[in-house]
Image (cartoon, rainbow, N blue to C red; front, top):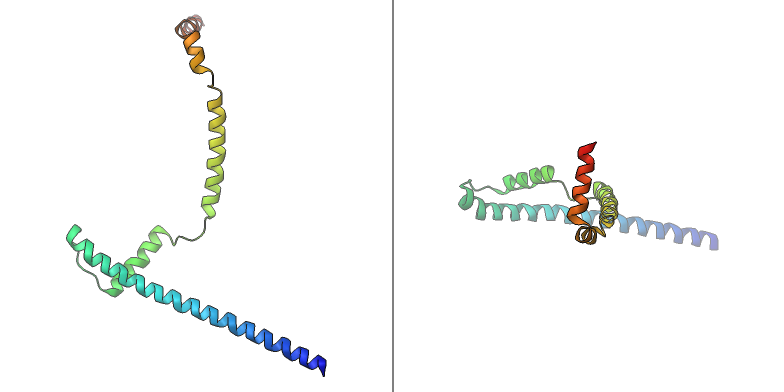
Length: 131
């Protein structure tokens, strides 16, 4: 009897978890749809407030505002993920490190120029002209 009770508890627990997950997914979907509708109204309001006065464009309705929103997301991206960014950041760090190494080679340049300066340059130039 104890074995059946344990199995029943496990099944009930599994069902509760599944129902909880389903409710969360439905809530997220409803929230996402609500945000899309709100963004549509925001785009419509901002467009109708700014664009006709600024550029002489016509006002838009709700569905055209949704279309503008979707089009802008297609053109400019959806803002998710940093797949390219991580490679770019790694490359930038590598370039920055190599740049610092290159600049460290010039550590004594000012001191050299003050001490040797023009005469060293003129001697170098003469050597090059003789070659």
